Length: 437
Image (cartoon, rainbow, N blue to C red; front, side, top):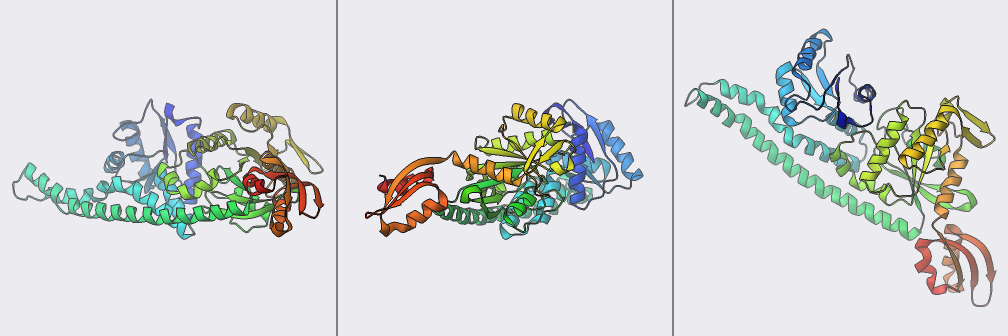
């Protein structure tokens, strides 16, 4: 594996980024036999790394018996081709590796469609390098015209013909996939509309990959979502009902995990899935407080949420895996951080603009989950409005909705109907307005 340290890389140290790349490689079933990096002002336009470093890689590949070189960045089609030609080694970049993992993890038809679209859009501009061996074979033949004409024949030969065929096929497949994904989007939109009619608020779990979102969903709702200590263990959004204090109910949705430099084509392909985040009333940002790069991971999540234009939504930060820390105290159901963990939490709040009321939890051990439910309920309460209504007996279903979705302070029965005073989510105002008293 190879990385490059340069100014545009952001907050991640190159060593930390390469350590994450090693995790990605292992997740994809690749054994890492060596890691190197180079410091550059900017990537080399032809080979990304410098000529000397490329020669070093060429020597190391034989010594380490490597059969693939993984770059911790996305390479251009020309860079991929140039590097492979100079070191005679299969080269893949960070984007291709992540796409491969997504393809292996996709379980539902929706996820498969989304991943395939991303793969096709990644491969289309890189098709040329797949056929350079045919162009070279054609160029070596002494066809009509001779000399430079021979090279021209090679370039016009089977390689170019097959390239055009592949381009048309992939272009057609991309168009078809976009139509199928648009249908998925319609179904999801219908599903969301039904949810809105039912009136249950939606809470979305967001966070870096492997932060513990699926484990938290399982613990809070008794779901059975796959939860493994692996990157991108789950891709498909899963929604379950969550019971909150004082009889309130909400829908809790687990979403695909984020990662630094998440490929843009993946973000585009998973648009329908990520819209679950934009439709949520509250976001629960699950952060692995024990991770050595917790601060960088929090920044990455913040950047992705900003890219999705949902960074302004009400948010709770669940500091997960506190059972692995020595720096926390338990007093009954109350869990508090101290020491450097508390300092990091305060820093994240101050520098990233995260909510001040973070909640220390352990999804695995079930610690602090009552506090988290209370924090969710409190955030949802901010959307409640005062309501006083007289509901006719002919519309008793509205009385049930008020009890299920709101907070009843007073209730009395008279000849005209049921008088209720309390609070309701603002989305119900129009529905109850005709009965305002």
